[in-house]
Image (cartoon, rainbow, N blue to C red; front, side, top):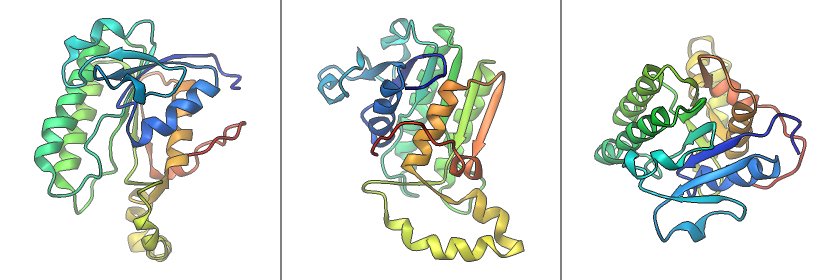
Amino acid sequence: MSEAPAHDVFVTGATGYMGRALIPVLLARAHSVRALARPGSEQKLPAGVVPVAGDALDATSFQNRIAPADTLIHLVGTPHPAPWKGQQFRAVDLVSIRAAVAAATHARMAHFIYISVAHPAPVMADYIAVRKEGESLVRATGMNATIVRPWYVLGPGHYWPFALAPIYGVLERIKATRESALRLGLVTLDEMVRTLVHAVEHPPTGVRVVDVPEISRAPRLEHLYAV
């Protein structure tokens, strides 16, 4: 159990890749979790979560049901991002962050946590553009916020980039490519969960940006869990 003060956390995208790993850890550390779910999808949420029926693309469907949460974690996004999914990024990722920001502003949220993406990068231009716009929307609210910028998150069903690890190792040792290799490095789902838990338990004053090197150094948690 965490020694940090308990928080009441509202999660969008709770049944996705990252949400399924994060929520059990938050609960195990004595935080309360309210999770947005489409009507009929509540059964997909982990035990112990308070389900909130609503549409992540429509702020009015959940903005009055965020309280008493003090922290909102926005995890909605297109699964398995790829360069050809630009339309989905604009229809889902962008619309959902607009809705989440509007709902959080309406609810006077104390802390907003947003999963963005490392940038700049030579590929995924549409994805990066949408996530950068999301960052701008979060900043414009004036809320205390944590913006987390991974590149690729390794985990169940997302292991193919392990083959690139030796290449990253070489690039990190070359002065001309070291900065890019570190900024666009691979992180694990475990490291992302630890980063998000640390963000919940240590909210910033103003806007804090967490890049890949900091994600990879996320503090260990004092209890064991599986992701």
